[in-house]
Length: 322
Image 1: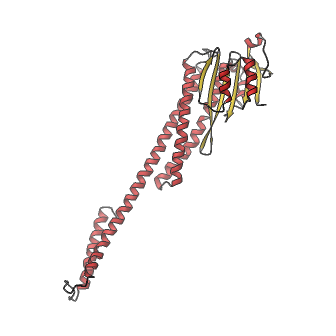
Image 2: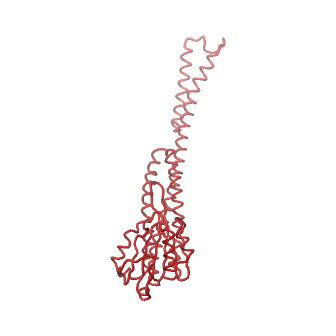
Image 3: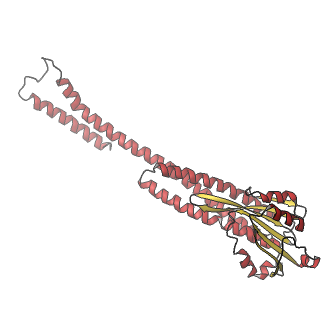
């Protein structure tokens, strides 16, 4: 069985455990609600819940798929929401899906893949009967809030890596592996940015719109969730800019160092060309060449070569080419 927990609540207190196909009396349905959590549900389990709680077949069909983007749909008097969970595994962000069926007297979650840190959420809400007693809409807010809270650690871990990479790029060349890692992280953050955008739009709809099962009293709570999404979205945008800056700075620094080396090679080549040219000329087998018959001709030629080389060295040094 993939059932994580299935309980009936009344006035914010857990009353009893329930079965997936259990039917409720009208009094129970009016005064309380059930909260059912599934992980990797089977088709039979979802069809059982569909029959018991009159879930829309399109929503049930969507809940069977392991991954799909965040969305919000209204079917009659029921709200169907898909929230995308995320977790950093190595250098990759692993995504999961939490499908949420929200009715007036029931809330059903079906999780696929990375389920996020929802395990202790039920216990925390049960410890606050006043809040849990607000109903399914408050539980929906708490689930979305917890999912969004898990986005921040992803950003913080990637941020540490990017800032360390930024510090290394100042003092040394970025290697092939580090450049490849920049592109990999940029791809992961870009996809994460799209997920945040879709989640932000979903939560804003809950804040601005009037939907079944969402009371006017609870609607302001979704503002806090929207603020959290906007905050993470802003930080991810900033981190993407840092990644671009690191790559551009590294490229400029590498080009600058290449230019310095090129100037140094050019300077030494120019200096060494002078004695090579003079020696080449005097290495020709001509009889009538100036200075061949003089006593100090050899030393004079060496002196001239040395003087010209020193002159060029000083000029290149002043020009900061050496």
